[in-house]
Image (tube, rainbow over all chains, first blue to last red; front, side, top):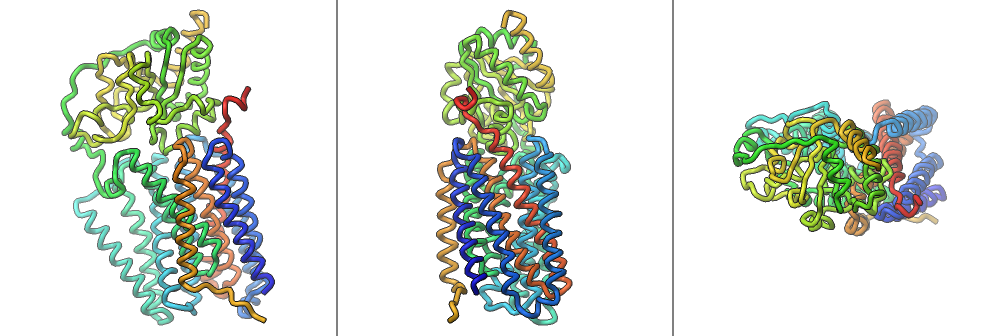
Length: 472
Length: 101
């Protein structure tokens, strides 16, 4: 009984620290300490959970030694692998690691539900229903997140679709829900194991089927949605286990994640339903776009660099291509040369630059760029018209004027950075291909736009050298 | 003397709704500069599922429960540890220009 109260109070402390930590993570000035606070909460929660050893039913005692050894082994293996892997991946790979770890959380929630179902003796139909709902959501999150990870990591390149996909997915989901209801109705009968296996198989399959048709450009929104799903699943399993800390932490993540998802979808001017169910980026849609007028002009990197050196103001728009080329360090070196010459340099970050909102900010921070010269789209979009030079590096869809002008374009209506309004635009691009969404970019054909072809790292190296050659 | 600590569904509903509002409020005024770290941070927080998995494993009385419980703890631990490391790495990069001088 005493142990039970200590566990309960520890859960309260942990939940409080999680919320406090999350709040501190909401501001750049306090973000770093926020994750530490939340980390302390996690340690408290995990340590306290071992107090359950003092209060185990008699039926468990013969298994105690094995269970304890398995628990320690699982903590070391799972935690150690993830810690090592998280330390090892490059910054560009972090969004997909978020997806992978999120999937693991969903899998853990589903596993908790599976154990609860196999143990029998549910106290009420409500708890049983909540357990099954958590299992469904956790399983979908597991497989959906793994697919999202594979897409972001480039292991799955194209959306996979077939004609009656929505009908098939709907039927699969309905069948899985019916199986879940069957589990509740036939609990503690011989039919339970079969129903449970089919139920879990259906839920896992639905996670795959739901995610495969979604285009790569929408993957950040999907990952955020699955993050919210996992939070919800954890909250539900918390209720099944009568653990308020899990309920609080899970539901906080569920609602915070849902809001983040909606904010991201809004930034792309797309409803969540659109992200999940439409065929964004289909070739047919792109082909239907308006015919492009004008032609691309190219510039040498050194000419572009000198143009910026003598400009009064430069706005830089970094995109994922910059990150892939790992050129942010070289870019900042170039920026410092411009600043030393009195040029007013700013960075303009589109909400979905990089592979995830805030991802580009993280990449620039890695290179040492002070965050107070990094601006959000809504704060800087009006400045382009009075800016001498806009430098676009590895960004594509987020500067495509077709989003404003071409009603037939799949990205029509998506808020974009007004790079085309700058006096002169330079676009650093590896080649003449289309961007992530597969849509033709009208900016490249503008009167005031010049293309600088080449790998971002090489181009920026040439730019730095050009500025130094004229006396720095 | 025995104290009943079990939850009625109504208390559970209170907890869920208040937690949902808390999550909404925490995120509602976040600059987009922190969207990815916050997603990663909230990913870390639902790693507390490892506590539920530990409970399931430590109470296991069948081979099936031990195997699935083990899997749950390993996955939950990976979620918590990995989520923490990735978030910490992202946030370690945020320094103002004032700090750097």
